[in-house]
Length: 468
Image 1 (cartoon, rainbow, N blue to C red):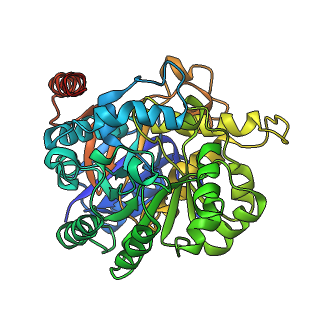
Image 2: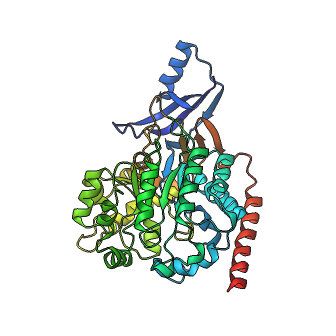
Image 3: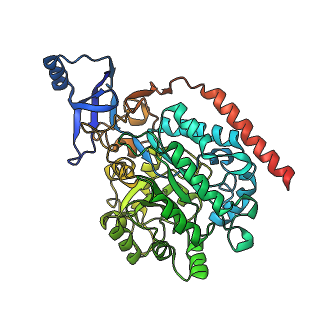
């Protein structure tokens, strides 16, 4: 039994049901769960009275401590192709068609090194749980490659085995060359569940199944994937949905329905399902999401950079839809900064959208922070993360607020995490283990990783150029 005490935090943000914020806060971890929390003086007194030994103490003076951030949607492999197309102003379909040939050159090493770099950047931003959507597997690449990277870094991981089976010759968007046979897809889904999925409380690794989108898979694959997932406890379903007006048109032309009714007709709604983006649902469709307890991952920066639109997050939250936050692909953002993404979510909802005036009070800093913590935990079906409470997983992050970015922000130190420039994590604890200490990931040679990653990125571009 090992105990870790983090104490003297300027504010400890619990995100519990009462949304308590504890000045001069402290948190006691026993192995990998939270054992006690409260005021630092009172908690230390309780430790003395009970005679509980502490193996390590961390002084969080000058820091705000919050629950670890939860990233509900990502494409880690896209760190290899950042800024391609986004700087020129391509929208989603054009951007995808420009990048598919490059992504088709990936191999196992590409997937591994991009996951390692993307996860490291996310962790430095405060992410402790990451869901990733890997949906193409060229040249022997497998989901196993990014799982290896996550295990090495110690992040809580929800990789989803994605898929594309509807190529251009069948009316889909992706080239046939990067699509897979549907029987092979389902067989590999069974394999990764059997090899990696852990449904137990405090699990560090849970598998999801994630056909890519309505324009890249068949209705039959959607049905078969849902049936497969629901034969296994804790295996959730994920896909992109209602991201753009072009997608709405595609679904209406191909299936005679808009995206949400189409997925609902396939059995793809429920509390085991979450959708990325959900930029263009109508009022009735928001009702369907709420009634079926389906989850939504909001990806504000990606939706802006690809000009997809502004998701009606305020409306979805008010009507009881479970909403979390995601960075989305590193090539459609082009960053892995989850605290910054929470800031973008706050700002974007304030700007408004057609039919809604701009309002500074539409979305508060604390509501945005909740999307990235409690909200994300709910979307991923986790009741053991997302808040700091006795018995929950010891996943938390300390951010320094005594630097230049927060000078003069003492009036509301919690809101300042989002209203001021985002900073990196000073300390991060995942499953009771200190993974970031004084702003650095322990045991990681970051310059060497960046060099290796950039070599792989250049190799992809070279391969794609010679294959034309």
